[in-house]
Amino acid sequence: MRTLFRKILVPIDGSDAALRAANYAKGVAEKFDSAVTLLHIIEHPGYLLTDTKDLPLNLIEDMDKNGEQVIAEALAIFADFAGRISTKLEYGHAGKKITELSKENGYSLIVMGRRGLSGVKQLLMGSVSNYVLHYSQCPTLIIKGEKQ
Ligand SMILES: Nc1ncnc2c1ncn2[C@@H]1O[C@H](COP(=O)(O)OP(=O)(O)OP(=O)(O)O)[C@@H](O)[C@H]1O
Ligand SMILES: [Mg+2]
Image (cartoon, rainbow, N blue to C red; front, top):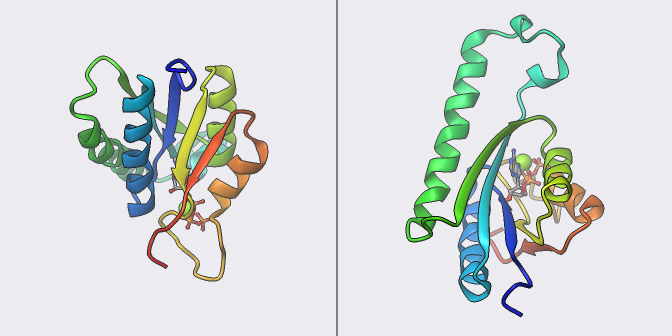
């Protein structure tokens, strides 16, 4: 039973919803002795271009810096997880990257927020959580219950 969730992937975007999901994932990881990876995808338009020189350099730098902050903030939750916490910063389409990585690297569980940073009130779920829930091939836990 303890090996049920050996590796947990926690996609984070800097939102409160994602931090709540990270805290939830921590509880699961403590129970199941899991290793946790915090993953942030930088979605700057450069990943669509063949030549990122077409993008203003300061935009790329700002997004990279923000990505590092997003990771650092969530990493603080796992301060006592030495040896079984890792982080990943990737570029691309968030939903696709999360789904691909979870498959390629054999994750046993994804834990993520229902909503994220943009939080369009009319929608029940954000586009990233919606995408991952549809296309992931491993158990996927969407943490609900955030303030509307
Ligand atoms: N760039 C990202 N990198 C990693 N995880 C992400 C990223 N964006 C969103 N997530 C994950 O997906 C969850 C839901 O966020 P999502 O982006 O789907 O909602 P939203 O921002 O409210 O809506 P939308 O972005 O579709 O307008 C977040 O709580 C987080 O766990
Ligand atoms: Mg979003």
